[in-house]
Length: 410
Ligand SMILES: [Zn+2]
Ligand SMILES: [Zn+2]
Image (cartoon, rainbow, N blue to C red; front, side, top):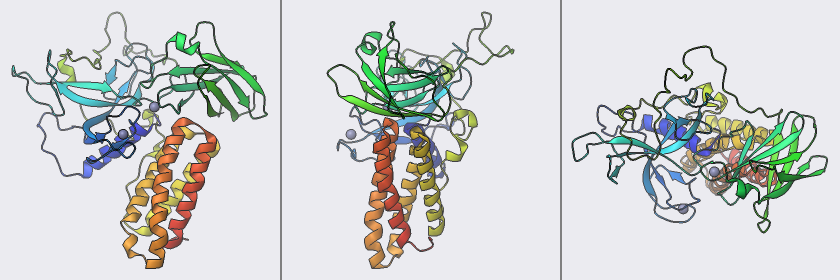
């Protein structure tokens, strides 16, 4: 998923392991930890592990349980607890972040914890998709979020040299065709050619005839959602032609067939769903599985105990961020960026060991490092190379200052 929200879910599951055990009903040991989120639309990326106020708007954060679940790329109603094939179309499931609650049939009761309903029956587990909970490309392309925090888009570069752009809303649902038809834009290639980006007849996507470019193929999209709205800028770097994911061809009986109905999918947002199968999900899969689509090299490492080790990791992460930016893999930048932020916060706890003249440099440098790590995350989603490069410059300078004053670095 290459997504911030997933990443946070990984972090939280890591945290949960080291946290004092909250007494939980014996039957459901695997309650996802409580997170605190901002109720304001557009602040879905604010997810903290303690109560308090939103760092963006100041509103009071609300407790919620977030979980990583698996869903069909184009059938969001299907929710599974582990990777596999979509029972409807056979495509590989993608990992998304949803909130988890427990409800009773035909009531509005919604609880953060499992329990009993008034009639004595057990409450039913319910998953609710979250805005920005799914940043997975659906057509094998590169996925970005628009600066308006609502539109999402995916660019693909197909064999033959055709660029296609698919448009989505904040829940990654494809936009209605009449909305897509209002859009206009152009693709600028590295050589400076400007090719119109126009909605195709049926309004399912926009298209620009680029022609064949050498790989990695770099191009920028300039897109207006309406003729009156501002032009948004997105930088795409395609390492190869995009391939539409297809259902794997299998010969086993595991694929849905007429004889065997697909195993009952859990229906999101359905309070009336009383399927007992949902009530006891096993713990989420280890985030390290390669099938999760997450590069195992990106899985968060525990924060080391010694300052030199922290600095070594910080330097590795900095290098990783630079590499992702160079390759145009903006959507992956948040992983090392968040790790670097966690390392910076760990170093912050050790800054009292510094001499006063070093502390004077370290304290503001750590703040800048944390801030620029957030920016790298935010700009990585937006896919604007200039913004993300600027954030990296600030980040790298802060890292250098931190390295210059903590003992044990080069
Ligand atoms: Zn907020
Ligand atoms: Zn989003």
